[in-house]
Image (cartoon, rainbow, N blue to C red; front, side, top):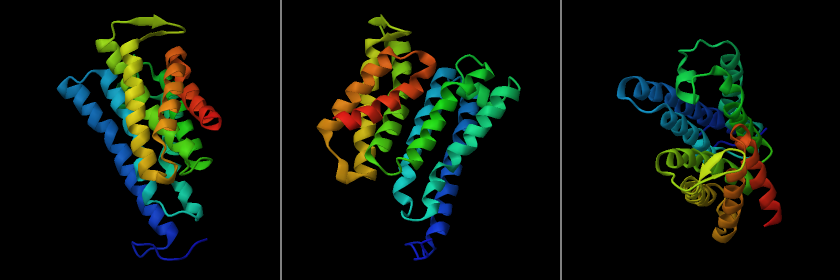
Length: 236
């Protein structure tokens, strides 16, 4: 265990624990805010769901604050672990008016939490452990969070050029996926792993992810998109 004091004057595990507490404050502030906006301000459920999705993907913004080389670096996935357990509990037993049901599902069916939403946090756990502060892990979360967050919102409201493989998508939605993925991926790679920054490579990987998102069945795109990113990183 690393005992060297960090820039906060704390041992590494104390520093990383404090950063982890900040991630909990960040993540657990989003659902009540979205619930308020949906219930009191008329925010459409699909937009609140995708804002929550993007916020969850953006959790990696805290990674630069973690001190490396200590077991406590893996506390970065703690909030994902907690949400995974909550999604299982809520997906099986929650009441229909539960806050998470209202803000994180498309239809209000609690069983949705056991599908794409749960897959998302499982991917977050994988990227924060096996791919901790690595190029492919950062890319996967940035693309999954922002690309897949923006695509359905744009596609539903502005999509005119439709296409269908396993589910209906739109060219406009796919373009939003590409642009959102590229902007987020470039930013987060620059922020977290700047030595790996290569805009052309990032663009090519985002293009691969866009194609995969376009042909993915709706319920498993949260698995297929990061899998495509991880595979593309090995090939490109």
